[in-house]
Length: 175
Figure 1 (cartoon, one colour):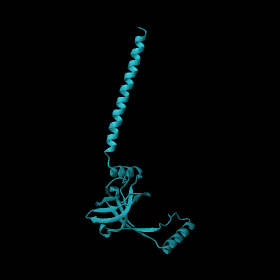
Figure 2 (cartoon, one colour; figure 1 turned 180 degrees about the horizontal axis):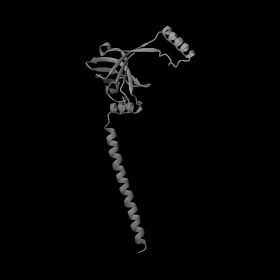
Figure 3 (tube, rainbow, N blue to C red; figure 1 turned 90 degrees about the vertical axis):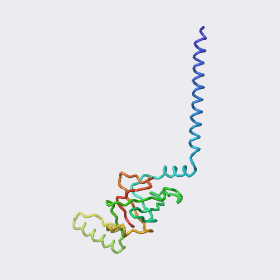
Figure 4 (cartoon, rainbow, N blue to C red; figure 1 turned 180 degrees about the vertical axis):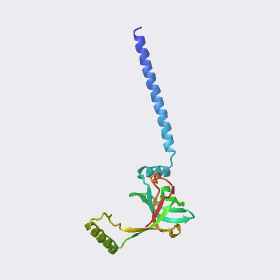
């Protein structure tokens, strides 16, 4: 009779082990079936999404303008290239009444040097001044944008543009 409890506890341990192995095998089989159903294209897109950094602005080239939408080719985000066949490469930028559109122009070397000299003189006088920017920016209309223009799109801090295919633009800067 003393061996009876040992046999029972050994049987319980053995049954628990067998049930655990069966559950583990079934779970791994189901997981394997789910991942094998993913196409190579989906796996590629998931990998691209995983390596792209979060961002609140995108730069690219306008492919087409359709009413209040810009079709934008985005070759990369913050140094990470997006393959040309990826769905993330083409984004739709929505322009609303609240969207500000600017044109940014680099100052010539002479213009920038003159601005720096003025800045130095103002500093020498003890004035509180900010350093001159290397470019000028002026507000423009949607009609001044065209296919082939390079633009930067800002979506605001509540829109991570990393994987959004349609983006509500707060600001567009033509470069």
